[in-house]
Length: 202
Image (cartoon, rainbow, N blue to C red; front, side):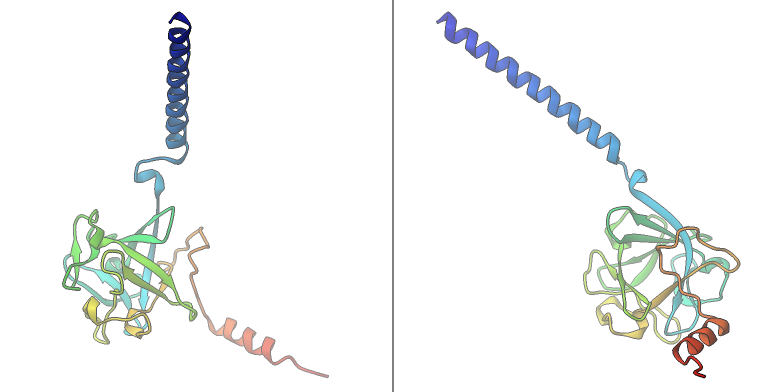
């Protein structure tokens, strides 16, 4: 009996030690990678150029349109990007409101962006444009018609020009992080491309 009791105590101690080690490893893992939202968030400021209107998305508060001027204060967007993945939240730097999409597909501005309705997923297109699809209502895109008014999410598809945007630096400023695929085309770069594609032959 004493032999079996002693063996039981040894097994019990072994389980306690294993559990303690597991908890220590788990705690260390959380410390390294972070469990709070702030540690997984990257924040950038840029503009969203609308392919349809030729202007920029602007957040006026509850109302959102794509008629903002280059460098306009309401066209400056604070984009919060999760470190793991391409899920973003877009907030107006001036208004403090977030771009959100409700269950009816309507684009609205909200002062609090914690809702899943305010999360969009970036889709990079072959033409250097970006599309933003709702994380909650998949298949519904952020889009604006030719007058700059928001389109209903249920009436959008990725192939429509109304949902195509280009990320641009705020006027007179530059983002030190280059992986955001900003695209700037000038007369000089166009001329350089032509010369490269048609070299002179002697």
